[in-house]
Amino acid sequence: MRTKQSGPIGRPRGFDPDEALERAMLVFWEHGYEGASLASLTDAMGISTTSMYAAFGNKEELFRKALERYTEGPSAYLARALEEPTALGVATAILAGTVRTTTRPAHPHGCLGVQGALAASDSGRGVRDLLAAWRNDGCSRVRERFQRAVDDGDLPPDADPGLLARYVTTLAFGITVQAASGVGRDELQEMADAALRNWPLP
Image (cartoon, rainbow, N blue to C red; front, top):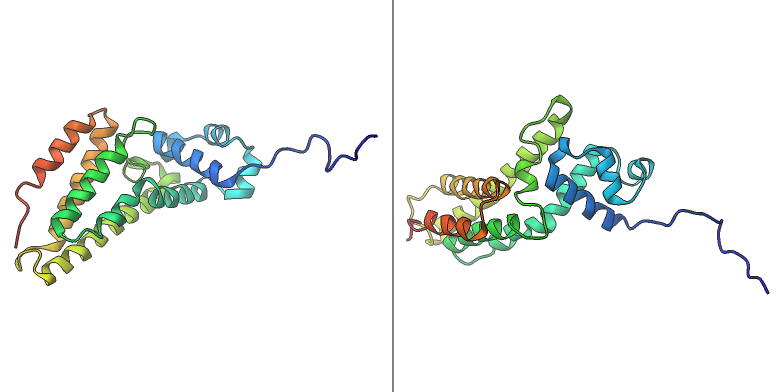
């Protein structure tokens, strides 16, 4: 006895939006915003351009969603680092997390949030501004944490939380650029350790 088909023949298999966004994030991470073509994105995501627009919006909206995923996934070490009990622990964890995340063998090297749109045409200005705001937000969160360290006596009273936050985040961004250039994990970690040897103690 023949059974009735459950649905039209040849209907395209549904895709997993979560998996598709993960793949898009990796393409943006490796190629940057402008270097990631729609063809390379949809090919990696396993969907048509029409499906991409329907599920994620245009390329810029897809990038915004990919950056959110990056923040909650590969870049989540920042949020964990801010919970360290001391300011030195925070700085150490941020730099170690940066080194670890930007040199993973199975992932693109460097940082989506740093290299995603350092150089962008007028059409990419929105993404460039988005990433500048993303980097500044990270620095602000570190500054607030270091201010708390000054208030708690974990940093000297004359320590400048803003300057220390900019120091640590600039080091972290430099590490990501070096990682993208092929500098190895051990060398980057040695540099991070050296940078923190003169950390101000209470």
